[in-house]
Each structure stands twice: as structure tokens, then as C-alpha cells.
Image (cartoon, rainbow, N blue to C red; front, top):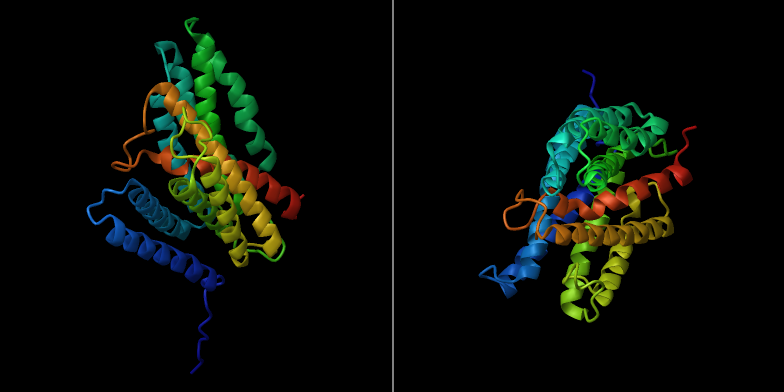
Length: 320
């Protein structure tokens, strides 16, 4: 009788490591709630626990859709883009003349972008929305002949598509990278990126509460100070460097990349806050009861993802 060898999953230790981090974060959040906010009246601790629950949900979704291989991950983020685009569009000023442009954004631009990403067609996926969609959307609105607030209406639609679809699509685009010695593992780059950026958000928030003094932009965010933000970015960078073993990077490279994505993510969150304040709303949507919408949970990732993708592709990718 032939004995079948039991081989571990190709990156079992990385999966165990990510799971352990989530469990430790959950235990820490519950311990802080039990010690300092048994009545759930501490906004800092509740914000932390809400983010940890969002990490669990995202991890579970990625694990579920990964059963379909890379295509499953691409479909997952296409669905995420659709949800984010819907939230963004609800805060824009639109007229009847914009209906064709909106429909094209949801049912043409979005699926085509993700098909291009799934095909690994880097050249076209990088240009499709910034060039072709950018020019086509105002044409669709102009054909309706409504000039009222035309520039503002078109710019809002273009911005929504760029942020919610183009930027988001760079997360699954990480799966298309051909990094020597990292075959079959690019999904861990997605995990690393999200962990670093989300931890940076939490640490910046906590740092502001603990040591924050000078606010970065009081009119845009009351929860961001220079001291707390710098502490959060630096600590998240150290954590990203410590997680180098789930990436193809050397420890010092992981540290520098973590510093980059944490900083870019911070500025992204600030920009998205500016848009919300301009529209006079607290949250992008009600997806997470009491804790905002989909974009509220991923605003930092939306800005960090394209920068991270292109830097990694330029310095580490072996594809032509």
C-alpha cells in the first residue's frame, strides 16, 4: 500500500501568522474594552474594535473568494469597487443628463477594468480609465446638451471612477506580478498591504488620543494630529518590516515600503475626509452600523494600493 505524503500548504506558516495577528488584535481589543469601556462608551476603543472586525470580514471574504483562484479575488474586488462607487455617487450632484455617464461607469468601465486586470494586461489596465474613460464620460454628458454645472458634474464622476475603480483595481493587480522566488504567493502581498495600512490608521487614531497636540487639518479631521500621525506611521512601518517574511522583500525593503504605504494612506484618508466635509456628511455610507461605509474602512488602502503596486512592479517584477 502506497503511503501518500502529507505536504503542508505552500504558504501555511504565512496563513497561520496572519491568523495569529488577527486573534491577538481581537484579544487586545476586547481586553481594552473590558478594562476601560465596559459600557462601550469609549470611541477610541470602539473604533479599534470596529476596524478589527472589518479585518476579520475582509480576511474571510478573501479566503472564500480565493477558492476560485486569482479570478475569484478579482471578482471580489470588482464587487467592492461597485459598492464603493455606489457610495461615492450618492454624494455627487447629478442631473438627468448624467444618467448615461453613470450607467457607463457602473456597467462598462468597471467590468472592463477588472477584465483587463484579470487578463494581466498591464498597459491597457493602466490607461483604460485615466485616458479612455476620462475622455468618454464628459462626451456622454455633453451629448445630452445640459450645461448646468457641467464641469463639476463631470469631474465628480471622473473622480468617483478613478478612486473607487481604478485605485481599487490595483489591489488584485498585485496577483499579476511575476516576482522571482514568490510564485503562487502574491495574495500575501494583498494581506501585507491591507494589514500595514489598516494598522497605521488605528495607531494614528490611538496616537492622537494619547500624545496628539497639533492638529494637521482641524477643519477636515479632528482625529489626526502631527504627533499621533507620525507615531502611527512609524510604528506601522516597524510592524510592516517585522512582517517581511510574508513578502518577497528583505526586512529593510519591507520597512521602507511600509513607511511609504502608511504615509500615502494617511494622506488618502485626509483627502477623503475633505470630500465628506465638503458634502456635509460624517460617513460615506451606512454599511457598517455606527462606523461608516465601505469607503470609510478602505479610504487609506484606495490611495496606497496604486503607489504600492507600481513601485513593486518597477523594482521587483520580472515580467517584460
